[in-house]
Image (cartoon, rainbow, N blue to C red; front, side):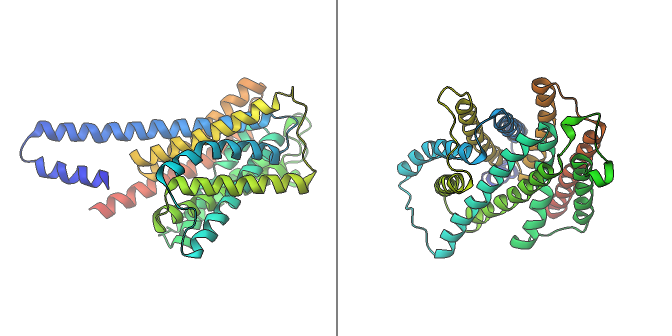
Length: 334
């Protein structure tokens, strides 16, 4: 809405003062640059979540989730109290989606932690960032958004990239020369499941925020509450609480997971206020590069040629999604 008002103002003064036109144009360009920078920070924060989750050697995913959601509640409750939002949302279907969406998001976080703890960091990051393709598909199914037939091809290419990274033994055999890439099939499938859950989470958030017009702080509060209950129950029924001894650095790493996860969400929301959603999604795909960089720096593990090939396919799919959305948007504006 703010961008439309700026455009109307620009049209009004267009014939009056060229200097004012230049000021409006510069302001729009600055907003775009800021939006892209915020999206890059969101991607970097998300990769840092993966890094610290992988450094947690003793804490299981559910215990990491408990710490992560406690931090989110600490950061979310004050804005909700300040805005005096009611926790009861009508009609009931809104409450159902408010509870269902955190279940999807929390499941996505747990699968993310499992994937990064059981396979190379860069490969896990690549697979998780296949979510834009699934987001487009689920947007067509649940939101009735227009979906070009080319997305079917992009999905196949994404799955081909996943295959190169997962390296199923019935295709590639056993990697005797690279033991760190052995037994990555199950973690790869879990990372792919994380991408699917993330896509469903994004679609659910769009319905809550854009269709139901529920305040974002209230959405985040429900996300933290349901996620915390989910984490506690999951930890209890999994293996019981597995909190390690107090001197363990895992608590510090889990605390960093919660902080960077909250920062990633904050930067994402700020970026979406400055730039178009598909541009932000493409900029966040830079997390693939960050993932490989941290993998090389921290673990001294150079990605294999198959990993580079799979990453190239997935990055190409995300780039094509950006081009396709940009083209359709320009056509609609004509």
